[in-house]
Length: 287
Image 1 (cartoon, rainbow, N blue to C red):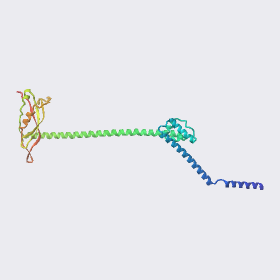
Image 2 (tube, one colour):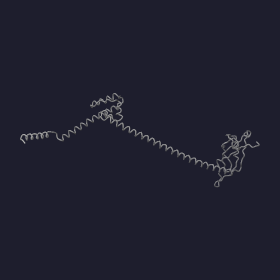
Image 3 (cartoon, rainbow, N blue to C red):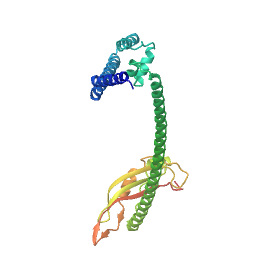
Image 4 (cartoon, rainbow, N blue to C red):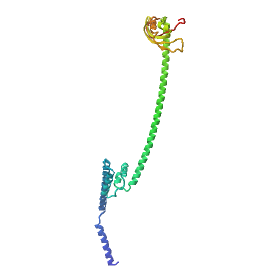
């Protein structure tokens, strides 16, 4: 190799070394990249904040009409260096509905795809909610039906039990009443035939009167009360009785004359209350 060529090679090498020595270091390059990233992030945040403020302003301005909303978006887009919004107010309202106002203001290139995706998600969620609501309504209706059926079943059982208890009670009361009537009838030692009322006899009226009284400790009667009085033929099962008081006075007077054996309980004479006695008034054939 010639001296000239060696000299040129040496000069070239020195030039490269000199240029390398004068350029930025790796640390300086990394710092410059970090600062650039921070500046970019700050710019994006500033743009995002401006879009957010704009959306909030339009949302809170109740008196803002369609033209004002379009004007507001285009004013911000102009500041951001973006293309003008050429859509309608319905599009702006749609962005609010699906939470994409900020993307619309920033003129996000993926806005339409995001809007379609969001609408799809919302529709699917609404469909899921609708199906869930229908199932819940059906379940509630089923449970309500079952509850009603159970309540009706329990009510029927309760009513049947109440009716059974009432029948048993009535049967027992009737048994005790008959026993009391038989016991009192056996104690009767002086029956009394009541005086047939003159007015009833003149009219040919028949009937009966039911009285209630107390048998005293000595077998006499007191506290006579007329329970009911009816006119009709007691000997005719088909007779329709009608209320009347024609025989009440005669029955009350006759009851006071009744005599009974004294009732003794544990070696002591006692009174008997609420004794019922029926006086029947039937016209004799010769009357």
